[in-house]
Length: 234
Length: 80
Image (cartoon, rainbow over all chains, first blue to last red; front, side):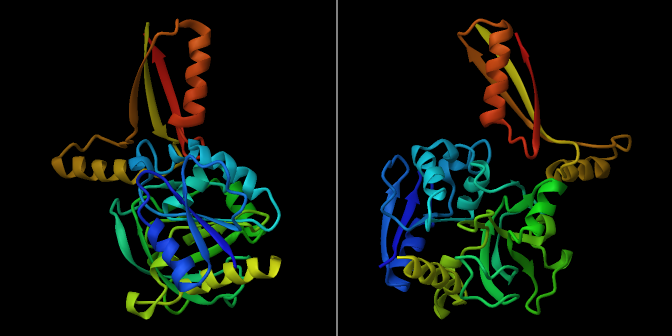
């Protein structure tokens, strides 16, 4: 069975949803990891969930970056067949930790946006998207105020060149332009991975799109991809 | 004892939607001469460390590591 570890910071609030997605919906093993934990090597996948770690004080993710568990996640991410998955605030923490390049700015509308979005899968050869087809459109909700991804031109060019842009905001037909960009994110970026493809950050919440009752089952594509990838590597 | 006053602001080429909105409000209020508004953070630190070069180095370190995100922000500070 795949072992998921879900990190819990003071202020995390999507930790239980992530646990439920991995444990109840995927039928895998899942445990919570307190932010002071040292031993995380037994897990295959570490999820850094959404929420407001440390009240989002200073900048979203800026304080969480210095939690003890983050040092261990840096080491964990350097190992073979280990996956790190940051969702929403988790993505912000991965950026602040420099496990992924760039930073988040306040949404261009200045508002907290909570709604369903359409995402185009730009790269389906990552452990997180292998069960998707290329350019598949996933319907997954966002809920954030700082999701306006920004990086300098050089970084963006390198992200595009290395196929590290995994998800982009689009409409239901797959059109990508300013009108399909909910938060002002550069290049309509909704999710990126590292060069090794084992660290992914995304603003939308796949754990909130796991059953029809929640409005979409598309989040399951991502959790299924992760689960299948790890099973093959075990 | 020294007091450090730190200003963290978005880099010039980074769009500041908050500043833009305030500028828009000022326009509507009739302040026509204002060209730009940029919003940042002000942080005050009181330290028992002595001033001088060493403190300056420490504050630079604190800003680079925590108070500012070098991807999007810059900072200035003064020591009193």
